[in-house]
Image (tube, rainbow, N blue to C red; front, side):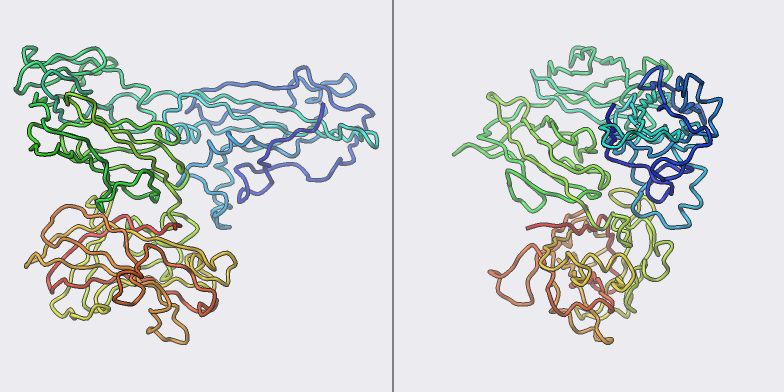
Length: 580
């Protein structure tokens, strides 16, 4: 057989792979057995299957292997296992954000993790931690089972003839791990509106809300007043007359667990010419790129026929297909599903999918669609030391380099559970706050000499010159006494020789906000390029080729213009991403 190894090689340090305790890397070691024949296998491929959460299980890598007719396990001290490799799909299934990130483990993390490896060679056995694989099955979508495909070399000291097409003795291993669905602990759901003489799908989900929970969402559905609406076995509700009733959702796995959903049968929409999907900025692109680890707001908007007035109730059906649609998280901010909040959870879930929206109850089909691609968000990557989701107040590990600091006129607090996803930063202007635009706000020091974050912008690290970046953030007003509109400004300073005045070398990203709104507002910054000419505004900042020196700090700033002493806002989902 040919030495056809997979693309991801397990080295002998955990910082490169998820495997430790490999054998020697020599090409054919001197075996005291001194065999004159290569290893032979009863079956070229080993296949094993285990359930998750079974603790540490062991696989004999020499199972069915012989050398000169002798069972290799009996002379295992004369042979060794080398060059473990895993195919690309299996490797990706192990790459779960927050569990392993092979590229960014510190030396201490490597040392601490050696006894926690998912796959680890010990002597002639492969040890598999099925408890950790439980986490991977849950984190990678509705994955009830996964087969990990590996190969390895069994080296007994045999030297293949010079010029031989086969140079190593390779064996293949397939390990299937079967997921065990979590027990249902509860049920939740969304209120439902259904247009008269039409149908809409009820939405309920099992608790806990792991992605894997899709495998146990086995419900029965019952309408309280069947004269108002009916429901089928799949939860599709049909409106018969105008009115309100309830829908009871019960777990078939545990009949003691149920949830009641309010159902309104409403008037169908009248006077609609078409509908349009719009972004938070009111744009209607056919295709959209958006950063991961942030929330994408899309709104369905009805457009009236000429000389018609829109009337009735507007309820929408949203369909997500293709690409990473199974990895997206979707929430609707109103009963009618007019606005959807869509999230890609991490930088491992990138790619495109299609969003299609239909207005329910219209006399003729009214729909619109959009292609969306989630791109890498540098502020939620472990390669940079900025917590863009504002989940910790002062960062961890690297001291001041991971901390946001405030000006004298601002206080900063971490508000647990107040964000769009987890926590948020609460920024409050003190009574001593200045009215200067660049006086009240937050700064983040990116040490480009040794810290990771500065590499994002610093051209001296290689690939940054000419690179274009976009930035966005979510903001919510907590208190604004006069409801005055305000702006948030984002700039970068390459502080050379202690000079903080070099802002005009970087972007002047600005975003305007409605001071009277109490809802979360999405801001995609516009680079005004330090002039008053709107024609020169861009959405991107291009890293310059000169002036941004390697040994100096790059300061990231967020400042607030138009807020008054005592005003407070929340910040969440800060993103920086590549764009045109």
